[in-house]
Amino acid sequence: MRFPSFEVASIKRNASLSPQSSQRNLPGGRINFSNQRLRQVIRAAFGGADIEVVGGPNWIDDDRWDIVAAPAAVDPNAPWREMLKTLLMDRFKLRAHVEQRERPIYALVFARPDRKLGPNIHPTSTPCAIEGNCGSTDTNSNGVRSGTIHGTARTMTQVGRSLSGYAERRVLDRTGLDGRYDFELTWSEDVSIFTALPEQLGLKVDGQRAQVDVVVVDSVARPVED
Image (cartoon, rainbow, N blue to C red; front, side, top):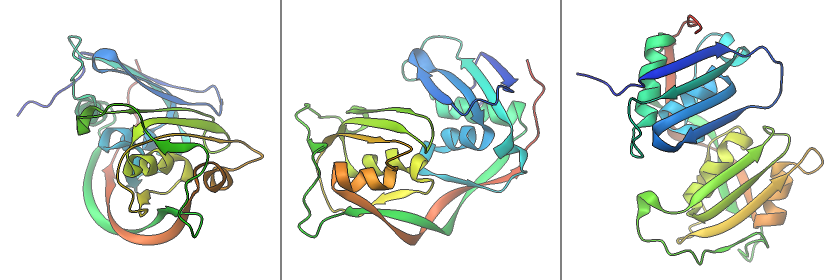
């Protein structure tokens, strides 16, 4: 069986000590990860902020990496996550599996008893017909310290997913709301994401436990750099 793979890829250790990092999924199936911890890259390959990666040596959280890769031909439908898994298996010798475990999660719920949403979120006016190709979420952040999330035509499940990476725990929708929403959430060193969420969106997160899929790192090795 042949797994999808990138045609060209560059992997380099980032020693800049910069606190800023980025993940860019470019047109045609290309990726550009800058100053990323390997645990973050594995999460991206297996589903993004909506899945937790457990296990592995300390260096997958300590070392930072720049990864640039592209498929053989420009393809807007290129399965970049599957190609990234292949890259991780080939270059980092990653062996991992998915299993269900009971883990701490955050439930996304209303912050007010009257279930009123905040000033920065409202039902979208964007026409939306195809579930798999509808709306978008843009982020510009300096990790958990500061940032902005802007969403267009997002379901509440997708709102929760966009929060997961910054809440540092999976955020699952428990609002019961259907439909799609436009929203903008901004936080800073003075106003944390947990404070901004009820003030701006009328939502909050409630700590709970649930059975969820996790990625378990069985083995991994530092790569030979390009």
